[in-house]
Image (cartoon, rainbow, N blue to C red):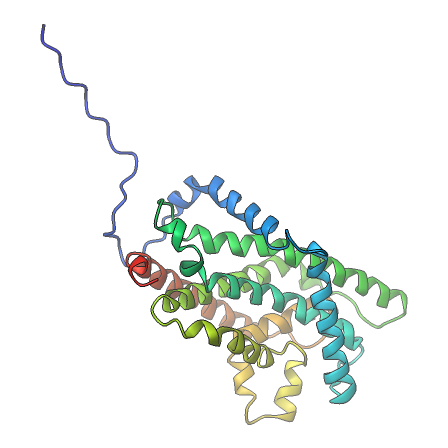
Length: 289
C-alpha cells in the first residue's frame, strides 16, 4: 500500500532580512494589533506603577510648568497674551507640547530599550514606537481635562475667551503632532544605535526646540520683537501646530492656512523618512546596540 505524501501547505508568513528599502506593511501591523494593544497597556501601567502620586504626575507637571512660565515670561518679561489669561495661554501650549515631547523622548530610544525582546522574537518593530504614540494619548487626555477645568474657571470669572469653530479639526492637529514625534523619534532612535553620544543631546535639544516652538509666546510677538531670528520659529512646523491649537481653544493668535499646509508637508516627509531609516536600521541594529 503506497502512502502518498501529504500536500505541502503554503507558508502563511515569510520572515526575511531582505526587504524593500521602504516597506510599510499595514496588513502585518493589523495582524499584530493585539500585541499593539498589549504594549499600550504595558506603557500606561508601568510608567508610574511604583510612584506615590501615580497619574497625578500628569497633572502636576503641566500645572507647575504653566505657573513658572506665567511668572517668568508674563510677569517678569511682560509678554502680553491679549484678553486670554496668561496662565491659560501657557497651559494650552504646554499641554500639546508635552504630547510631542513624550512621543519624541520615548520613541527616540526604541532600539536600545527593546534590544532584548527584539533579539528573541519577531514582530513588526514599528509596533513599539506606535504603542508609545497611542499610550501617550491617555496622558494628553488627562492634561486636556485639567485645561478644560481651568478654562471653565476663567469663563465663570468673566474672561474674554471663546472656542473657535475650527476646534472640530483638533483631532487632525493631534494626529499631526503625534506623527511628527513618531517620525523624528524613529530617526533619532536609528542614529542612537551607532552614535551613543546622541542620547545625551536629546534632552538639551528638546529644551531648545521648545523655545522656538511658540509654546510660551504668540507667534506674532516673535515677528514683531525679533524679526531677524523670527525665521527660526516660522520654519518650525511645531510653532504652527501650537499656534493653531491656541486659536482653536482660545481664539488667540492667527490661523495660517499656508502654515498648516507647510506643517502637513513637513510631517509627511519626516514620517516617511523615519520609516525608511527605521526599516533599514532594524536589519542590523542588534550588532551595534
